Length: 438
Ligand code: PLP
Image (cartoon, rainbow, N blue to C red; front, side, top):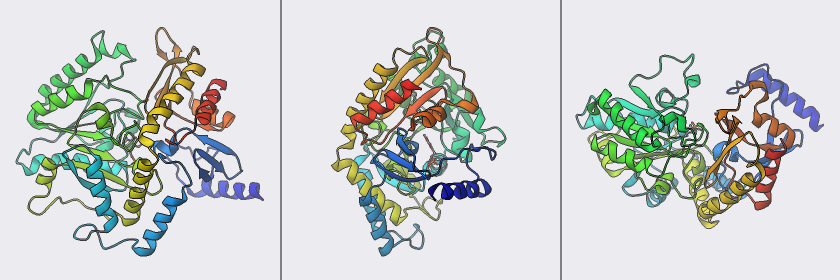
C-alpha cells in the first residue's frame, strides 16, 4: 500500500512539478513525508540523517510541536491583515523588537521579507535608494565576489558569482562588479601574496577603477556557503569595512545562512567583530517552519529611508503574523536550549569526527568549520590541490544519500554540512563514518 502510494506520488510529481536543477527525465525523486530531530522519513519508509539541516536552516530540528502550536494559535487569531504599509501586528512588532536587541548596534530597524532572495533584492535597492535620497545619485554600482550566492532575483542573482547561474538569463543587472573571494586554502588565487593584503589591494583598485562616488554598496556572505564554506582570514572583514567607510560605500552582509546560531552567534557579524550597515537574514529565523526573512538596517540608513513619504517598496507578505509568531518562538527555543553555545561545541565534535575519520584520505584536501557550518574540500591530489573531478550523474552527495541515508550537499568541489544545532554526538559519528564508508 505504502509502495503504491509512492508510485502514484512519483508519477504526479513527474507530471506536474518543475523542480529546480532536476531534469524532467530524472527517474529518482525522494518524497519526504515526516521528520523528527535530525531524522527524516520518505514515502517508502526509508530513514535519513539530515546533515544539511534542510537547506542550511533547520536550527532547532524537524517536527517540533511547540512551533506547530504557535502557528496554529496565530492562524486562529489573525492569519493576515490588509498590508504592512499602514497596518501592523503584534508578532511582527515583538519580533522586530527582539531582533533589534540581538543584533549589534546600530542595527535597530527591521524590514521583513519572505526569504533570502527577496531580502537581497531589498538590500540592494535600499542601498541605492539611500544614496539617491541623500542626493548621491551616481552611487549605483554594487561590489560582490566570485563564488558568492545571493539568490534568484535579478539583483541578488547578478551579485551571485557563478556564471552558471547567469547563463540563459542575460542580460543580468548592470553595474555589478565581482572581486576575488577569500579562500585561504587556494593560495594560488593570490599569487604568493598574503590573501588578505591581496584582497584589500584588489578592493582599493576596483574602487578607484569604478570611482568611489559611483558605488552604492558591497554585498558579501561573511562565510560563503554555496561557494564551499569559504572562511575569510580574521582581518578580512574589519579591513573591508575600514576601506568601504573611507569611500562612503555601504556594507551589506548576506547572513541568510550564517545568522541565528549557525556559527555560534546570533549573527556572523558578531563572530567577525564587524558591524555592517544592513544584514540580510532568512532561513534559520524560523528554522524553516514557515518562510520568512528579515533585514536588519542601521539607524543612519533607516533614518534616510523613513524620510518624507517613506521607503517605497512593499509587498503582500511583509511582516506576516504567522511567520513572525513562529520566528519569535523559534528564537525562544534557540535561546532556552542554549543552541548558540551548542553550535560551537557540537560543531567542534563533528569537525574532529570528520578529521579523525576522513583526515587520512587522499581525496580530502581540507576540513574547515565555524560552528555548525562545515566543509570537506575534495581534491584529486593533495600536493597540487587539484579539485576532484565531479560527474553530474554521480555527484558525491547523491551517492552518499543512496548508500548511507546521510544527507549532505556538494558545493563547488566540497561536501558541505550544516546540520540542525541539536545534533547528538552519536549522530556526528554516524555522519563521519558514512562519509568515510562511501
Ligand atoms: N543568500 C544566501 C547566502 C543563500 O545561501 C541563499 C540560499 O541558499 C539565499 C541568499 C537565497 O535565499 P532563498 O533561497 O531563501 O531565497
